[in-house]
Image (tube, rainbow, N blue to C red; front, side, top):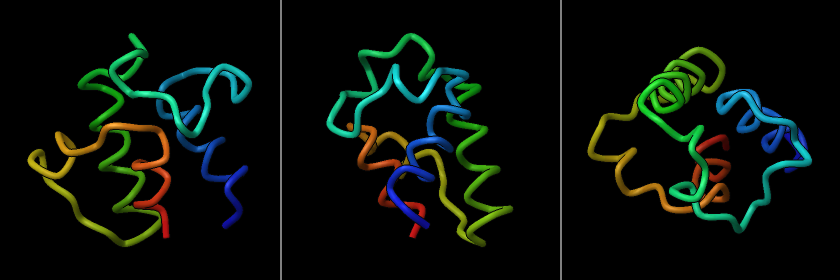
Length: 72
């Protein structure tokens, strides 16, 4: 999966346009990075990447790139 495709998935999770997010941006700077987005990320990782992460791991995510790195 390309970085662009990963960025599109992150944008979808946060209900944003791809042009509104950057890889090096801090997640805390997005109002859309909330509990619903975290749950969406957990579901996406489980369904599409067969990965399971918990709350403790999601709290360690700082940047958009951190989220993208999970999609490998």
